[in-house]
Image (cartoon, rainbow, N blue to C red):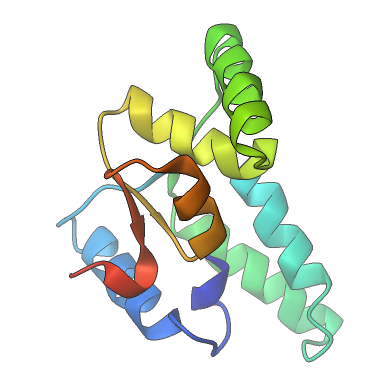
Length: 129
């Protein structure tokens, strides 16, 4: 989602995905931690002024993307998978949520996809809109 906030590789595709979301054509669900990760990425963007940073996070909130928390059992699974595959809890939480919802997980993180080895984890570069 951060890719939609400023121009970088994959940002055009993310913007297309968000447009389909706003048009009601697709659903997007993220773990609650996503809001903190996005705010953190905005905070460390040296090209944005303080006001632009506030506007960026406001624009993200205005999308009204559904956020969900992991259950205790899902968090335990998250820790187990992260340990086994040497991934972060943050990245793995998106994957666990996608498993709960029986849907795909789109990521720009090639290394994460390779470590998880699941056909439902799709690279943003490979995702067809």
